[in-house]
Image 1 (tube, rainbow, N blue to C red):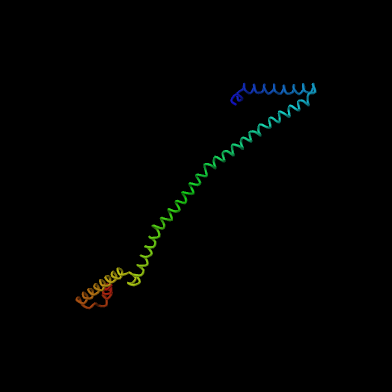
Image 2: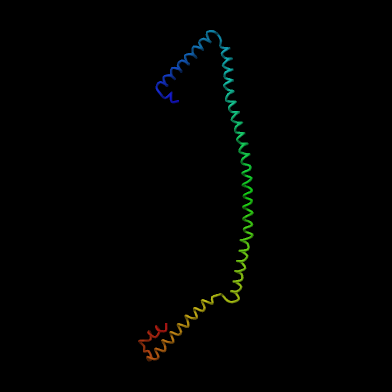
Length: 172
């Protein structure tokens, strides 16, 4: 195709086209002068039939190749799909076994422990013993501070009206 892009190639193609066209015109004139049109028609039909048969052969070969490719793909894909199916089944069984051997016992144990702790909590109380102990310590410390403040106030004398706020402040 590179030859036809050059100037010499274009000139050569033009000359050959003109020669072929002149040859066809000369052949038509010669056939007409000699009265050979029925013979030319028969030859043209035979050539047309032969030329039409070539694409038919090519199409038949293409169909044969497609069918062969489909068979080859099928023979290779069926084992792969079978292996995938086996692998999937194996994974499913492994997951089921893992669930039966690890998850279910863990869930049962956790539920028993939760139930046990709820039962103990119901029997022994809300389980706020630590919080109640801290509240008791805080109240005792406040009570001790209040008593100490009252003792100090009693030793210094009775508070007058102006220092009542100070006494209340000490109690807090």
